[in-house]
Image 1 (cartoon, rainbow, N blue to C red):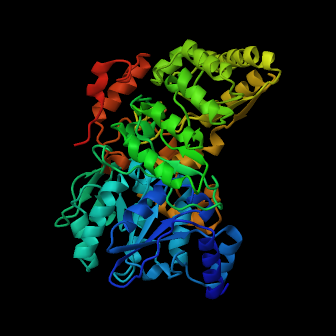
Image 2: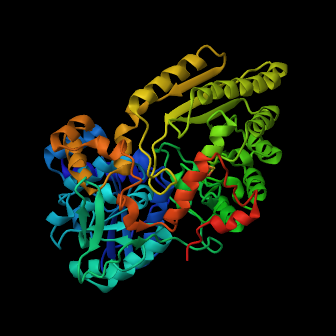
Length: 581
Ligand code: SF4
């Protein structure tokens, strides 16, 4: 593949876009912003688009995008030795001052390595020269557990782009020497420089300590960077429209950040606290501006209805002629007016997450809704004319028994009965589609110490559920067993010793089992080990704002089947929320 062909392709892509930014490079800090997956996937990422906007709204910065080429193109490009180019000016990525990755999924870790190779930048930070771009890795996944990517990054950006982008730019503007850049970033909130730490291991292979190198200025723990309030912030919203993405030309906008429900397994809930609502007027202004490019609004928030003005926002979007699709709705959000507004906007399906079938197990995981409330929510959904319901369940939860599996079947059947009651008079029956996944204990949650369930047990449970759910009319289930999640768990729970395996998997086309064998990695050590006695967890290097004692108490309360009610239900629990200073 010739470089002129790559340039032509980039220009064709740009010709189909609206809203991209092109600036002259002269005198500006040059940032190549990489999404470690294809254009089709990356352009659907609101986080990626937001970081692009944040960089480019600083006059002294020019930020251009770069993506992983699609499979065939990637093969040709590797074979021809053609360099990785940015989209906007088709400049080789290696010529930029900063190469910043926005990583949303663990599966993309191998793509980070592929893109570095393609850019002709050494994948390991230790092998780079000061002439290479500063490789900064950020994104949702890395601020939960940055360690598996630590050796590939000069700097890990831990936290929210609104704080990190201006701080990174000001250090880069003031320094030209690589050592200086790292030394200036290391003490700042949200910047983790992995090479400034020695990791000491105990005899059993667990981490004994992260030791900051003398004179590096690196803190014992890196505090996550987060905005205190979103009151005066522009909400993240689609700024580049293209038909060539997963969501087509949908206008995506973040309405409220965080969720205060404190489900004990949920890293997104714990990690985006406190809940912060973006200004409704600004949301509506941006939506009005975007209306000429799009007639579909995707509301990206894990707790949409925690926005105090959500009904006004939905009504106004409808009046602008948008059809609205929420990412997912919390069960306690499903009020009559909300469901009616969604129905009016043309929504035919609603997704909810009961997580499990029994009230008992829901108390264990702190999902603070009951089966009665779920059935009431199903009634609200179906009586307002929504046809289809999508359900998320998990298996492998602490204390789960066969009765809990039967309860998944029973609850689903009861929801189906509600659907039939409302569908029959209309003469049109929809579908209930369920999805069951094994629990992956996540860093930064009350389950961060527990092993993933024994695969033989999860397989048995998956099989049992398939039997229980077979042959129920209008109900369709996809049930995944542990095998699908095993290596994803490794990338969630691993430490920097996983780097060799990531590189091997990148070389062998994603054959993780072979990659682990080739590099002598004992993946079970990370996935199936009780970590409660570990002195230090890999992700402890980042201080996410939650106290360890809080997670320990939450875990114990779960075993006692006790809820920690969210503030919405019990005001005094506000004190449990880790308010970031
Ligand atoms: S309701 Fe629970 S699972 Fe859903 S986002 Fe909030 S904390 Fe997470």
